[in-house]
Image 1: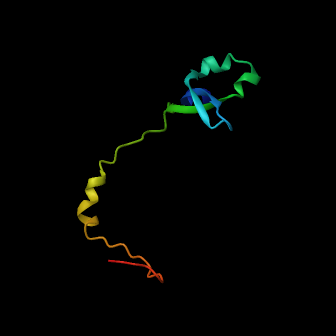
Image 2: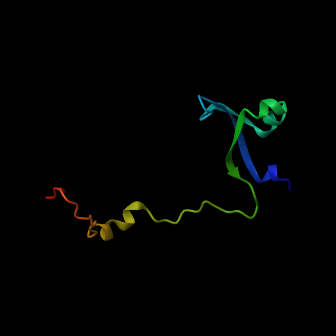
Image 3: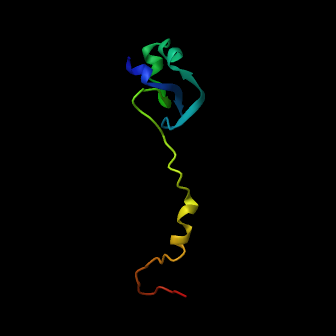
Length: 88
C-alpha cells in the first residue's frame, strides 16, 4: 500500500493576507496531482478520512458531558485573595 492510500485527502487553495483562509471547493488528490508543481504549492492538504487497515477510530466512549454533573455540583473553585478584590 502506498502512503496516498492510507487516507483520503482534499487540497484547498490558501488565500487571505497571510494564506490563513482555505477556499472551497477542495480538490481530490488526483485533481491536485494533475496541477503543475508551482500551482500545487498554493494548496494545503486536509485529511478527510483515515483508510489505514490498522487504525481504528475514533471510537465513542459513551461518556457524555452530563455524566459528571452530580460530581461537579459539589465542586468549589478556589481563587487567591488579592488586595482590592471584592467578593460576595
